[in-house]
Length: 170
Image (tube, rainbow, N blue to C red):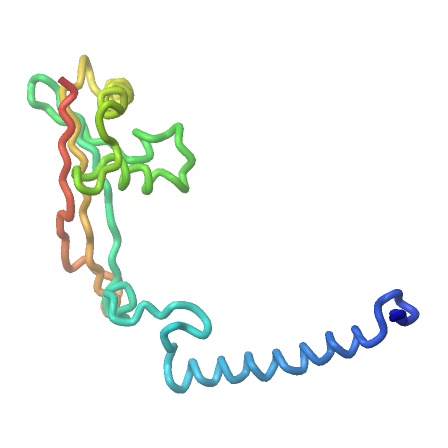
């Protein structure tokens, strides 16, 4: 069977196939748009997941998380540093995931023996930059803030410590 080509070098009829796809796709997008604005976003979503029923979808509330790192010295004093200070060598986009997977409470942490000792030595060396002398421990505190979006300016109406993890360097 021989394929015929038009003057552009495409197989004959392909131009009508592409035009037909555009003719079909535009009404589908229109139906999606109208359905979304009349009924709401279904699940599974036509456009994107709606996350309906989760607290992140609320029009009145927004939630953020802050990670604080407290480096403890032998005399009991604390120095607070940020996740960005501690993990400055890591790409910024990956820092939060590194904190969640390696510096959270043991059920959530993936660091297991025998790797834990090497990881703690690395942490101790990085924490030593922030304190005078040798750090004895590090505490990571995860705090979740609730923001009221109905107020202007937006106000913090709640603060909850969701995880607290201490790593002793000795």
